[in-house]
Amino acid sequence: MAAFIRKTSFFGGCLLCVLLVGGCASSSDMDAMKNTLINLQADMINQKKDMAAQKERVSDLSKDVMTLKEYSLSAVKDSQSSIVSQTSDLSKEVQVLKGRFDENKYYSDKTIKDLIAEKELQQAKIAALENSVKELKAKANSAPVQEEAQKPAEKPVDKPQDNATQPSTSKDVVRQLYDDAHVDLKEKKFPEARQKFEKFAKDNPKHELAPNALFWIGETYYGEKKFDDAILAYESLLKKHPQHDKARGAMLKQGYSFIEIGDKKTAKIVLEKLIEKYPRSSEADLAEKKIGEMLSRNTAASPKSKKKKR
Image (cartoon, rainbow, N blue to C red; front, side, top):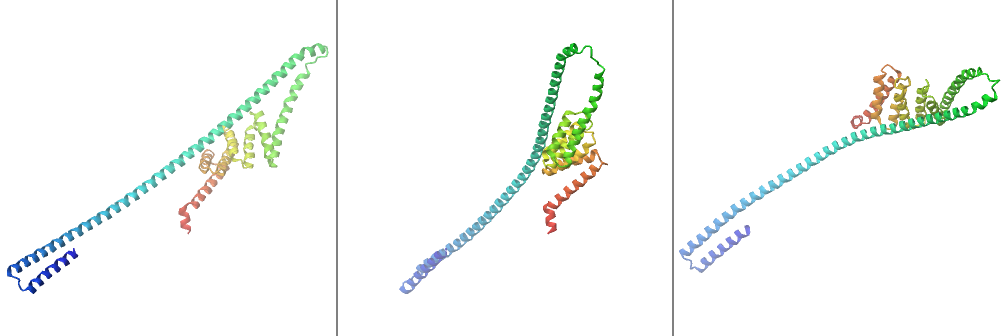
């Protein structure tokens, strides 16, 4: 536009000089030149208006571009925020599902082990019955020969005496097995103690010390830091003898075992059940103390508490 104006001015000036120098410029020629200059000036004015209009359009377009940029950035930010929120929600759902899966897996494993133990117990009972049947058959087969050989000297009076002395002898053997297991436990011979306690509980399921044996089996696992097995052993006692005195200790040590394997959520549930069921027991006091320790550790480990310390 500036070049056009310069060219127009230069052309008008040259024409005027030619006419003046030639000395032959007439009034009509002067009028024509004036009209030409007026037209050129009008064109210049129009060109300036067009330039101003184009500048406004460029300014409007720039504003539109900035608006679009801001809108795009806002949309991207909103999209990212939405994605982060959805990811957080999905993460929470995954954690919930993982907790449910771990819980179901624990109870499934426990059920399988209980079934295996029950199967072994039944097999042992069947084997004992088969041996009893064999012994009875052997006695039945040998009885006629003994009766024929010892008819004059047979005295059935001795049999009650044998039956009277036999129970006391078997009781002593059973108790000795339990006591030997306790000695091994105190000496931290955990596998030996566990084997004897398991035999005692399997052979004498209705004995008054059978629940104690189940508890000490869990203690042998706990002493070896086999906390998964300890949890299942304690659960066996809680399932078979829920009202026994050892049930409180089993719940407490089961909660401790869950803490050791990193499942603090389940541990807290077990310890809270213990407090609810036995509120005035020493085990409940220990459970409350352990829950308090867990909560204080969680608070100390949280990001907010770290910021406050700084």
